[in-house]
Length: 117
Image (cartoon, rainbow, N blue to C red):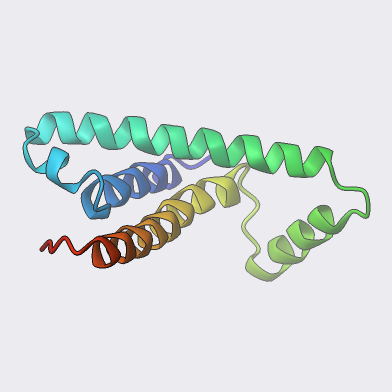
């Protein structure tokens, strides 16, 4: 496995911590070295959750749809590194989860009448 792909969960963890409305104020007070460590821990947690989800989906695949989709993506993109798609998803899932949670927090703030910047 190429070590350059391992940076994707780290970037996903950093994006999650720095852009999430819930974590943003806590992260601003951290020193940069602690922020890198926290991003690594968050990215490792997202990577583990993504790996666990992909393995569970592969085990529970009664009609082989997951395997068929996986083979179609591998044929289209033609990257045969092990776990490259899991690590790529561990970057995209935090980005999507952050934006969705920000929408929920903004909607809650708007409904409660609290103004925040």
